[in-house]
Amino acid sequence: MQAPQASTAEFRILVVDDHLDSCLWLKLLLERGHVRVAMAHDGAEAERVLVEWLPDVVLMDMVLPDVEGLDLLRRCRQQRPDTEVIMVTGHGTIQKAVDAMRAGALSFIEKPVDPEVLQAVLDKTRERLHLMVENRRLRERVTEEEAFLGDLLSKSPRMRRVFDLVRRVAPTDASVLIRGKNGTGKELVANAIHQHSMRARGPLVKINCAAIPPDLIESELFGYRRGAFTGAVADKVGLFEQANGGTLMLDEIGDLPLALQAKLLRVLQERQARPLGSHRLVDLDFRLVCATNADLEASIAEGRFREDVYFRINTITVSLPALCERPEDIPLLVDHFLKRYAKEYDKPVTGWSQAAFSALMTHPWRGNVASCSTPWSARSSWGEAGNSRSTTCRRRFSGGTPSSLLPPQPRHSPHWPRSSAPRSYAP
Image 1: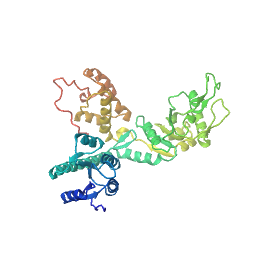
Image 2: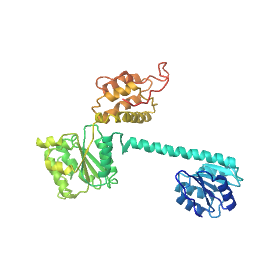
Image 3: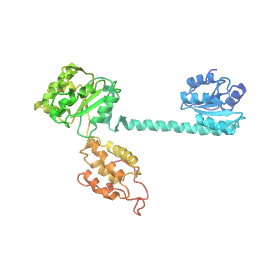
Image 4: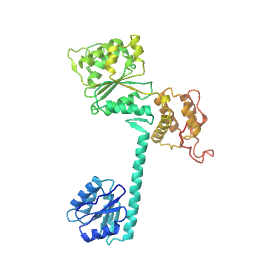
């Protein structure tokens, strides 16, 4: 059987029945205008036409010579989830209809087929498919407007360029330096680089160089053997070795002690490290990602950071803008965090007034995205006694909090607004 050729405007129906006269009658009944009908007389032929012709709907007899109708139905749903299947049978029972629905059929029709019933089912199916296409287009449009990269969310052109750079760099093994102010998402970018790299199955080991005392950071990175120093009662594997096969993130690399920078340079050059108190070199194989909020060029000029280390870690630079430099993301992030914490604390999302959003858009957000997320956690946890949290919210906003950002009154209050706040995000 030759499947009819079609244009993109066609609505395609595949009729599967081992009786030729039934197929021809349905083809004569249905094929008009932009509707095209193909026929198949057994399961094997139906699967071939399904894959080659990509019908919108399959009208399938429950009884076929080479396969059970329900088995073919399941295979059709696996191969073409977007194709709807309507089962047809001359021996209809409630149990058969239930089985067909459970297997993925959209509807169930008994023989002899009533043309009006069939047309009504097909009209509903066509409307359903149209809605599916529209929903897919809407999702694609949302995806175009709101770009995602791992846990990062943005609609800013600057962040889109960051996402594109990360996607290009991640599959390589090049060292990456992530630069940006505190709270801009440097660690999330490091996560995304690792997740999209060839080392994604390996470990992602992180250390904050500013959070560990200078006299301890060397033992953390290199590890040590028992007895190497006072208190070394057992062997410890260093972070360099722990990161083997994966990614090592050195956060706040600008705070790494100068003496240790020279040792880091040697590790990066030789790809080997010697644990403290050991005579054995350990082979290393990790991808290095560093992050900093410091001006490394100024640190080099002042003699606080080695220029040779800078060039080693700075193969690729990813610079993150502050939140105030991408204000179009503020409504998006506010809505995202509000929904997240509302779900976490099982509280309803009521939206925000225009005045509240105006206040958010003019807030300096000195803590960037990290500070943006904090107030919504508090707001979502407010219950009927939520007014007690208002002072906490005020502290989060320097210069005070507008009254529109204070906790909502309980729903039983006579002052509760009759409609939810507008969702317009224009500043």
